[in-house]
Amino acid sequence: MRPKLSGIDHCHLNVQSLTQAVDWYEKVLGFTVVEELAFWNEEGKGPLTLEDENASTRLALFEAPGRSKGIAFAATGEQFIAWLAHFEQLEIKTILADHGVTFSMYFKDNSGNSHEITSHDYRIIKQHFPAVALGSHNAKRS
Image (cartoon, rainbow, N blue to C red; front, side, top):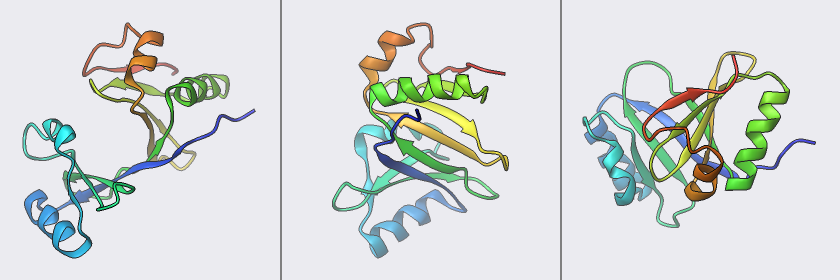
C-alpha cells in the first residue's frame, strides 16, 4: 500500500536574479520571505523560501541557470518514514537531508526529473535517523 502525502510543500524555481524575483513575487502575487527559513540563503543564491498571504503556497527560489528542480511534496513525519520504506521496497534511490528544521528526501522519477518529499516534523524523523548529520545528504538506496 502506498503512503499518503499531505500536499505540496513548495515548488523549486530557478530565477535569473534572486533580488528581482523576490520583488516581482512580492509586488505581483503578494509573496513574502519566510523569515525562519531565510538562513538557508547563506550565499545569496538561494534557496530563499517565499509564501503567499494565506501561508498556503510556498516557493523555493534559486538563482541559477536552466530549468527548475521539481516539486517538493509535503508529508508528516510518519508519512515521510513510510515513503522512505516504500521507495526502498521499489529500489528507488533516495537521498536524505537534515536541514536542521526540516528533513527532505530527494528522488528521481522515471524521466530523470528530481523531486523531493519534505517534512517539518523534524524531531520525529531525527529520532528514526539520528546518524544523518545536520547539513548532510545520505544515500539510502543505490
